[in-house]
Length: 423
Ligand code: SF4
Image (cartoon, rainbow, N blue to C red; front, side, top):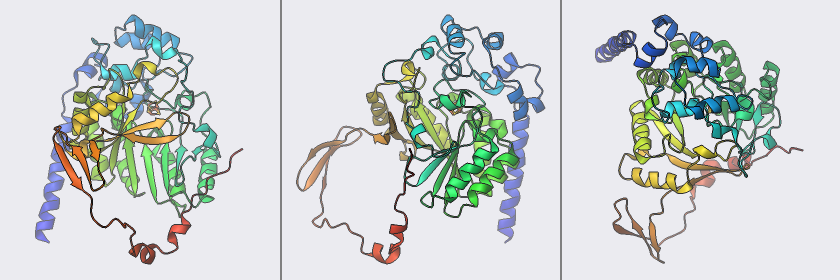
């Protein structure tokens, strides 16, 4: 008992020291250069960050000397997709290098205004599966709930820009109620991914109202929140938010770090706060040509995610979306990168390489092929170092699980998919 109390006390002291260290943290060079007059209190206030976001070419030019390509990109995409960068994310930009990964993710180039044959406005075929406006129900047991149409930073690689461009108009409270009603009527849904836009931009009160509505649906087992807030606006993750999210467990936060440059002390603090409150955090990165398309960049990103207790989950091949050809990598690049990770670093740092098939085919995963030969009784592999090893097949091949009948009985039948019939 005494040891437990001492342990807790030590944890509280450590936590205070960490927070004191954070508050005393020296101003980053980007902040010093771009926002020298912002007080610490303002900088740490997520609403101040939103109010001071950069939203136009003229504003952007006050901070960064743009290239001609970027200037044209801002002008030519102005009617296509929003421009928006939080001061915090802007402060991470290398003002001297157009290939800075933060810069490439937030400042458009002229290519973004061009659509190439085969590119799709709705690359994942979601709109065909929207039985109500705020729900995408494409897979048997899970749905995407579109909670909001805006973001703290408008990522140049966003493939849901038909929604985040604001073209559709915002999502109303009534439409969210309609979404909850849809969940209630669909007992096959056990997993709800709340996304958008960025749902953590809702006020905490609105977010809680939404999550409470979802949690009241008895057959929903898990909730996931898809958010770029820990990357682009980490100050939003305060104790109040983390405590509130904890009450909806099992709830997972799925975030979206694409480069180790985004893993700052502020981002670390946001992720630590979530994990310390018992909220698992997973990362979905997108592979982007010349942003992070080297094995070195991806390995560093995945390893650094683990040091934040953020589990690398997916590495996405870029979707075939309008205006994003310049950011797409050949499929072989992702596989080559995985080959340089598998075996050479912890398995936990190796994400699934996923291709979301254009037009709504769903995700498939790719990986290096380690099989050299398949024989009747053995398979010959090469390992990560290129050495040959064989795996012998067992004599018995019946893999039925006799206890399934006892443990599951008729319950398996309850989960038969019942997909919505849409016009
Ligand atoms: S945060 Fe997500 S939804 Fe918003 S612009 Fe970026 S990728 Fe798109």
